[in-house]
Amino acid sequence: MVKVIKVPKTPKSAYDPARKVSNLLKAHIVQLEAARQKQYGLMAIKRPRNEGQASAYIAELTQLVHPAKDDAAAAEAAALRPAVSDEPEPVPDVKPAKQSPARRKTKPARRRAAASGGSAQPARRSKAARAGRAKR
Image 1 (tube, rainbow, N blue to C red):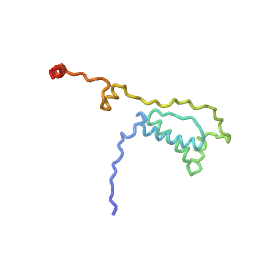
Image 2: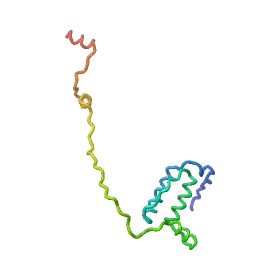
Image 3: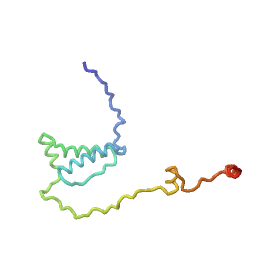
Image 4: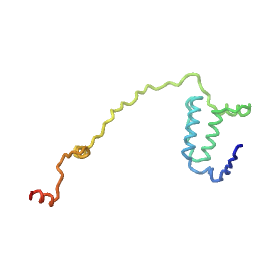
């Protein structure tokens, strides 16, 4: 017997077209743009500012990445696709920046000696301790 799980209805506040784009939507857009670039090459990237723009852009990207099966929707998707040439774009000859080797940070001598149990400088004694030692 399968247990039925009740899922609450999505609240109307879940979608606000004027609200700033969330990081989840931004990540979804990045993934769809990567899939589109893999299929069609480099294209202009849009940066939606609110959820309304993001939803429209996601719908556009989804239609490009997953073309429709029927003829009318396929023709609309083809109209949205840019013309792609067979020749690859020339890659500029750019050398990677030279990175300096990582430097290890070391502690100052006084702290290093104290951390290892030794002492780089003698500990200062209180007046009572100095007086008690002088009497011995």
